[in-house]
Image (cartoon, rainbow, N blue to C red):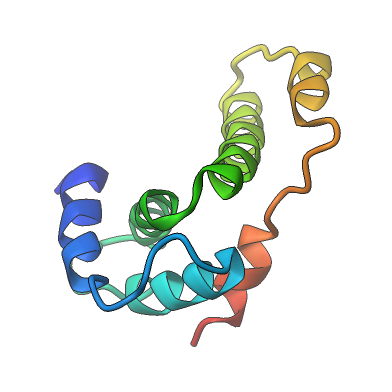
Length: 110
């Protein structure tokens, strides 16, 4: 099952979580529902789907922060996979933006 399909299902299951509010509350609430989601075969799938749902529920300001956070994660993933990346460009794009500590929030969810 694709991450997009899982995110769509998870999003419908998160309809009780109000959007546009406090980003940390949204992240924690969605991560709690998504971490052990019944449709996910891997933790990576659950994380990706949860991040997508969080993004959809965020206000525009927090979406900018989330995009910067995810761009950093994508760059790290690319580097681990052996894809050459421009680290300086990634860091410059994130300059002045407070990134979300997604791993911390993910690990806090039981």
